[in-house]
Image (tube, rainbow over all chains, first blue to last red; front, side):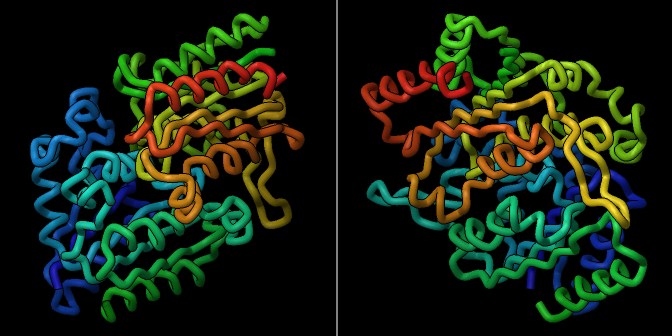
Amino acid sequence: MRAHVLYAHPVETSYCAALHSRVVDQLAAAGHEVDDFDLYAAGFEPLLSRAERLAYHDIPDNRQTVSDCVDRLLAAEALILVFPVWNFGFPAILKGYFDRVFLPGVSFRMEDGVVQPNLDNLRRIVAVTTYGGTRLRAWMMGDPPRRLVKRLLNVTAPNARVSYHALYDMNRADDRRRSAFLDRAGHAMRTI
Amino acid sequence: MRVLLVYCHPCEESFNRAVRDTALAALDDNGHEVRLLDLYAIGFDPTMSPEERRGYHTPKANELPVSEHLALVRWAEALVFVYPTWWFGLPAMLKGWCDRVFVPHATFVMPDSSHPMGPQLTNIRQIAVITTCGATWWMSKFVGEPGRRTILRGIRWLCHPKCKTHYLAHYKMDTSTPASRARFLSKVEGLPRLIA
C-alpha cells in the first residue's frame, strides 16, 4: 500500500520523533511504499495567504501553490498522521496543512450544490498521537483531534477505515507506558 | 472591562473584518477598554520553533518569545476571538497563537504525581467566540465543533473558575445573504451586553 505519513513535531529528540521513526520503519518493514512528509523539516508554511483565500474556490487553480502536497495526498492509499496534541488540537503546522491542502476539488467537491467527498483513493487513515492531559480531561474538553480524525476525515474519505491511537497523560507517562505505546504504534503499522 | 480582541483573517474585505469592526465599535461605545490583536496584520509566526519547544517547560524563559502577547492576556478581563472556522477549527494562525502564548507555569500549573493541572489566568472572566462557518449547524455539531471546544473549553479552563463563555456563529456562510449577514452583525452589536 502507498502510505503517506504526515509528521508534525519540531524536535528531533522528542518522543513524537521516536513514534515517527517507528511508524516509518514498520510500514517499510511490512512492505508498504512510504512517502514521508515531515512538515517541520520541509519548512511547510501553515498560513493560508490572502491570495490563496481569494482563489480558494477556483478549481483547479486553487491548488497551484500546494500542488506537490496535493499530488502526494491523491497518490496515497493510506494516510498516517503522527503529531502531538497541543491545546486539545493539531499543532498549527498540521492545522495549516488542512487549511491549505484540503481544498475544494481535492478533499471535497460540489455536485448540484451538495458537498461530496473526494478522497476516494484513501483506504486507511491512522492517527498516532500523544496528549499532555489525561483521557478524562480530553473527554471533558470534547477531544477535538479525535473527532476531527474519526468523523471529519472519514467524511472526506468514505472508503477509508479509520483508527486512532493515543497516549494520554504524557507528562506523567513512565518508560514502560511509553515503550508499550511505541510497540502499539508499530503493530498498527504492520497490520495496516 | 478590559477586553482583548484577537482577530484572524487574511483579507481586509472579508465579512470577518466587518464583524471585527462592529464588535470593536460596540465595545467602545459601551465604555470598554479594548485592545486589538490582528494576527495576520502583525505577521505573527504560528509555528512553534524547535528552540521554543525545547524551552517550553522552563519557567520564565518560556515567556520570552511571546512576552508582549502574555502581557496582553494578563491585562485582559475578557477575551474575544473573531475568526473564520476552517475545517471546523481555528485557522492555523490562531491555533499557533494559542500553542505559543498559552505556555505552562505562566498560564497553567503543570500536573505532577500528586496534583492535576491548574489554571493561572484567573484575571479572565469572560470569553467570547464570534465566527463564520461554511458548514451547517448540524454538520458542525456532528464533527463536534473542534474550534469552539479548543477555545471555550480548552483555553477557558486556564481562566477564572467562574469564567463565562459566549458563542456566536454564522453558519452556511457560502450561501449567506445580505440579510443574513446584517442579522448576524446586529447580534454582534449585542456583544457588550453579553460580556457585561
